[in-house]
Amino acid sequence: MPRPLYVARPIMPDEGDFQRMASEVWKSRILSNGGPFHQRLEAALADRLGVSTAMLFNNGTIALLAALKMFDLPPGSEVITTPLTFAATAHAITWNGLEPVFADVDPETLTLSPDAVEKAITDKTSAILAVHVYGTVCDLDALQAIATRHGLRLIYDSAHVFGTTVNGRGIGTFGDASVFSFHATKLFHTLEGGMITTGRSADAETIYFLRNFGIKNEEEVVSVGINGKMNELQAIVGLLNLPLVEAEQAERRRLRATYCGFLADLPGIGLPPEQPGVVHSEQYFPIVVDETVFGRSRDDLYDALKRIGIYARKYFHPICTDFEPYRGRPIVTTRNVAHVETVKRRVLCLPFHSGVEAEDVADIEKVFRGEVG
Ligand SMILES: Cc1ncc(COP(=O)(O)O)c(C=O)c1O
Image 1 (tube, helix red, strand yellow):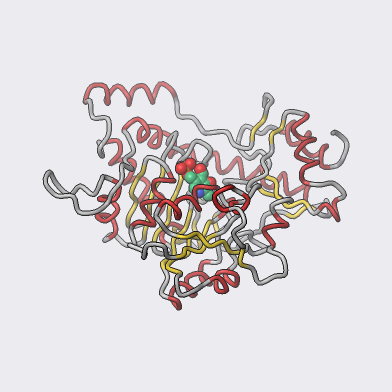
Image 2: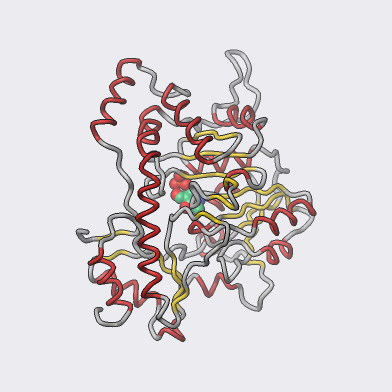
């Protein structure tokens, strides 16, 4: 693969197919507002993800905003979330006039720790916004048990788990709602895009209004909706990309096995967890570098890879509590020091897509073995 080599590379639909479908849009002049391609994609995704409600959005962040809005959470109430995520997760809470409360991650999965969540609950808590980070599934049973026991809403940021199933059940049916991102960096993308899914068909109408300014008909506006609509050209890209996802996932699965093959021998390199019963999305391949054992730091490896044109990513470092709007906020933990503060300095996502070739992997292995860089 020509350098630079990045962590993500989008799948691309056939250009001719795109132009053929786009010419129908030119003829019909139906550009947005739930046009025929939008409807087809929504139906195809409901089927693919095994969910009762699947509502497309123009991006994942707006979908997150709308998902939180769905539940009329009390203004100023607290939503417990993870700091080890993309900034949009915390921002969606803040944009809703709610307070993000950050809780620690589980050392094994790096997803929200149920024990830390339990400890973070106050009489102002109204919801949990958990993230299936990197494609690793959260502790679904423990989080649901906590949410049920305390009467909290449970929303999942599912940006990294397109197509994941848990014991055959679609990930988008867990909790009260799940939010996907179809950004260009994601396994399945629509250039920009997103989706809210739930396991209840009754939610479709509420989400429909939230996506479209709350407009019910020409004379009635029934909720404080936003403009979350996906346009027809994005929907065409989605329809053409959907059949390409499986082959891309298969390539990434092979790459995962190859990476694990040489990294498993290296003391101090932690591999992503295997989760029985989970069909993995293959979104990211994160490793955790324990410098005290491995002898070199995450940053050292990152720099060495960069010198040969391989751009790994320190996802997610800085974490949300390092960012200006949330700086200084505590991270609720059951440990002496929040694990996320350690792991943010150790985690590194390697290039993970079908464009990574054998010679790239060989170069990456050399860096890890100290033969290059
Ligand atoms: C965990 C997570 N949440 C939310 C988002 C936001 O999605 P979007 O870029 O589609 O707005 C992203 C990525 O982009 C993400 O990685």
